[in-house]
Amino acid sequence: GQNIDQPTEMTATEGAIVQINCTYQTSGFNGLFWYQQHAGEAPTFLSYNVLDGLEEKGRFSSFLSRSKGYSYLLLKELQMKDSASYLCAVSRNRDDKIIFGKGTRLHILP
Amino acid sequence: EAGVAQSPRYKIIEKRQSVAFWCNPISGHATLYWYQQILGQGPKLLIQFQNNGVVDDSQLPKDRFSAERLKGVDSTLKIQPAKLEDSAVYLCASSLDFRGLNTEAFFGQGTRLTVV
Image 1 (cartoon, each protein chain N blue to C red):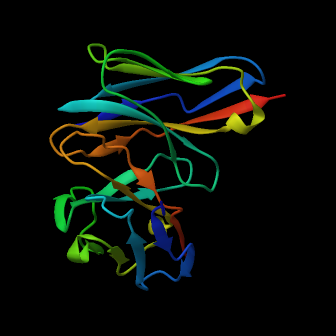
Image 2: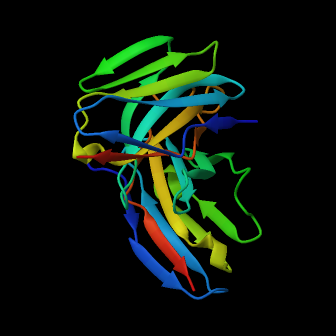
């Protein structure tokens, strides 16, 4: 089966850095996605990690450790518009099934 | 490039009624997903198509939910009869490749269903 865990809510201050962790257990792991979802909107793609290590994309970075079943999303120089839910999702290699965690609601304070 | 199109955006029905949602994926995308997202939770996969074949429907409540993907393009998701707990946003997503190659999923705006 699959199990994906991430914190339910986090709060951070504008201009700061925040790290959102995700742990997973799944059979046939292929890669790990991070999606951003603003309230009332569809999820939008942020990153996809297949190999171990850190991938940086502007203010956002994503890290993966396959051996530990662990990933994190790092957001730097936080802006108010970063207030959203951040969804960790696992892709399975035998059928491309994408399974989502419950999401982490990030609140940014001025 | 046009995104994933879904309709309707909103739907309110009474319990025991039926409802259908429509999805047009991005042109050329072989894989199509239907997700159910209850308020405050992550999307839950209901069914996954590869072209017009079902890859996974293990979490689809088949006594009341059905889905099809005619000709491997558009898809419809139907609920009959609806229950109060079906109130959720129904998201359609599509991705280009299969078998683990570039499987980023693009989402439509969703259909917000309220069952009263």
